[in-house]
Image 1: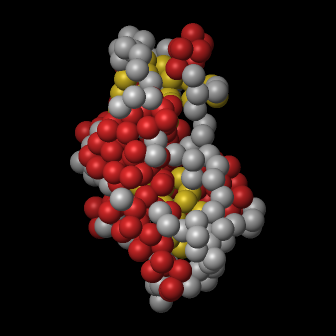
Image 2: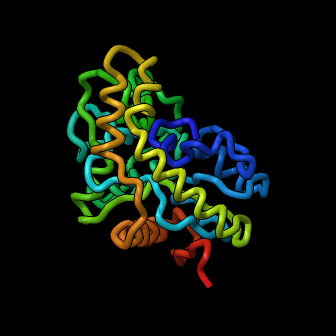
Length: 253
């Protein structure tokens, strides 16, 4: 969990002997879960469709409109895109972009993977997908498409980027309750969490707090479940996942 938006979900878990916290980019965390090296992970939502997992209920990283941290920076009109550079740190963001562009363009542009540097990516392609703190930090005047806003425009639904998931039975009811309590504690301490990111530059703490309060939705309710099912439906239609998975939660019978 190396991104700001994941910090509230693990607030206070560092000192809990039941949990050992590993921080890495979402794609590598997902690989470790798939390999059986982790009992539970905050995984990109598309990765849930690639394993037999259950979700910790009530807890997620989502948006109900502009998200600010998942952006497609582009030259010219979106409809004219031919080549798109991808930051592959989160496979959900890549899958989300592919579904959105297919819907909007009626075709697939050429995709290439690159390190997440907007200027370098835009030298090699018409557009650049960048996520996380790098997207929040970027201050260039390049036009951008906020993928959270575009998803809501196309579907009218929230989008779920990530959630806690792991093999059924890997966590107890007490563990689930502790993870839900950690999020409640994180939400009660957003100002302190944001202030800890002030090392990014003068005033970044205020921007970080506004992002956590106004752009990120941390609940996983019925609307989020509907948005997640629609995302899986679109991914399956494009062949990005093998099937549309049923949503299963830790604690389900």
